[in-house]
Length: 199
Image (cartoon, rainbow, N blue to C red; front, side, top):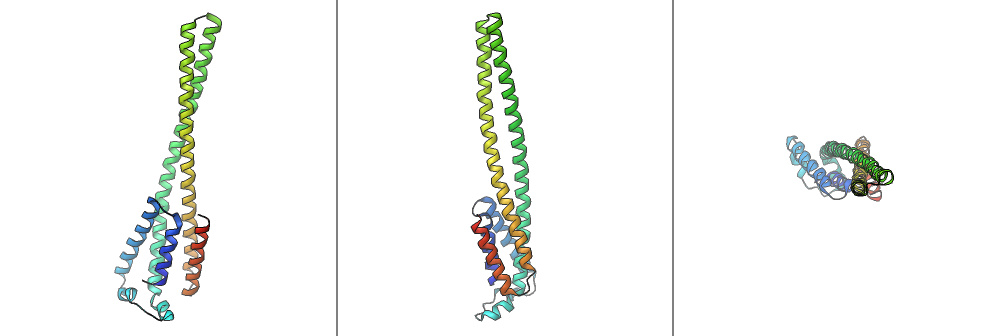
């Protein structure tokens, strides 16, 4: 395995840390790399062991291109998956907020109706029942708002993951433009370190 393949794998590992999405990213990369490497006629060059450092850079040019392309494809697919997760969580957040707001409004109206029944008509039993129903509605509304807050926290986590994927994708695309493999490897190492420090 070439130096750049190892560096790209380390970069992808640092993008999302651990979790299902991170494991999926690595698996997509490995699968894409294997498919592209087997399609390439120079597959023997990818697996040969070379002791001389300069020779390793020379023989790993194709492996470097394949690894970078496979990594970019994996980042794109993972970004699409993350975007669909974000969209679903946004839908859930909107729905829970609307339900909580509706329950809170209904609870307030029910409580005021019960208080009016107690105050103006001296209907104690129906007034107490109405106030109790309004209070229960308010409690349920508070629980739904708590669920909404949790959904928003998860949404923030997905947003951070998507931001890190996008940063890795842009950085790797820029590193791909560097023709000197040694400088490209340095750029990938620096990108990996920055992603780890921001993580």
